[in-house]
Image (cartoon, rainbow, N blue to C red; front, side, top):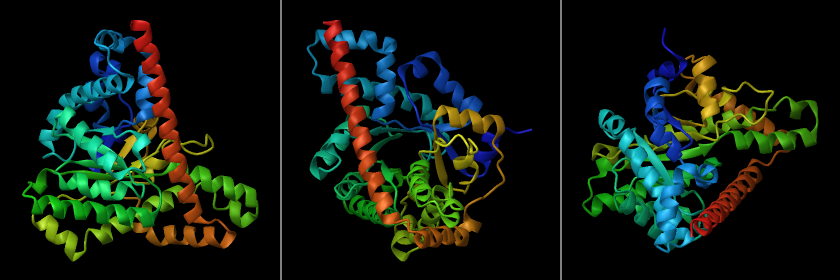
Length: 368
């Protein structure tokens, strides 16, 4: 009998772990998850690194070295996080090789403080790419308005990108356009476009949290009947958009020239509402050519009792459109929901980044 994570992989979903720490790397835990839980990549963000460094013991030696060298807080963060991503990339290199570069990917994010600064985002993305110096890295850039031209510029430089914090279909369409423009730029500059990989990280559970709060406030029977449906519906419509946009003449011409499809990635797949099934954002979002990045709790729940029933996306477009029609009818402004979520998402990562800076500052001070 195959495990649910094996079944998920067989259905064409790449399972990535939404977590990284030096302890996972040095204890062999990360390597074991590749074998035992079918993970084929890792995503990180400022919150994850803040949590890893707060525990701290595994970083003590490097912090002491950095402190002795007089490193600034930001320099120390850069060195520590890129070292972890390098090491994880090396662990995933066999997966990268076996999948022709599609999987085995490890993501590292530009500073959230730069989310509204195109030029600074581009500069740091290039700096991170050069420092990590692994072909299976992905540089995370947020899908803010300032992030869109940065995506084009960074992809145009031949760098693989994970576009993060996507909530709305309108912004997702702009992300796909930014990616295709970047591939065109890379091609025209003489880069081998077949080496450029990208994923578009569409957030799921946060949509349900925000929409459900509004539905509860409305309080009618028609509103409460829509609880816990918006996140999955939004992601399914994103996949419909993905299929449509990568079937255009423009996209097909690039793919025929060796370019790769920018895959949809389901992020924020940990279930926030304890009343919901803990594998909801896994089992209801199965389709070939997608990535699901899971916190460990969701990964273990999926492995333990996830029921994988094949493709649960492509046959459900009409039902997803109906959910959005009904949301509009009861008075939920989805455009406002997604803008609020983008603003909150950037702000949460900025807060985590500043927590990370504080943790590292304290560690450097103690080491000195």
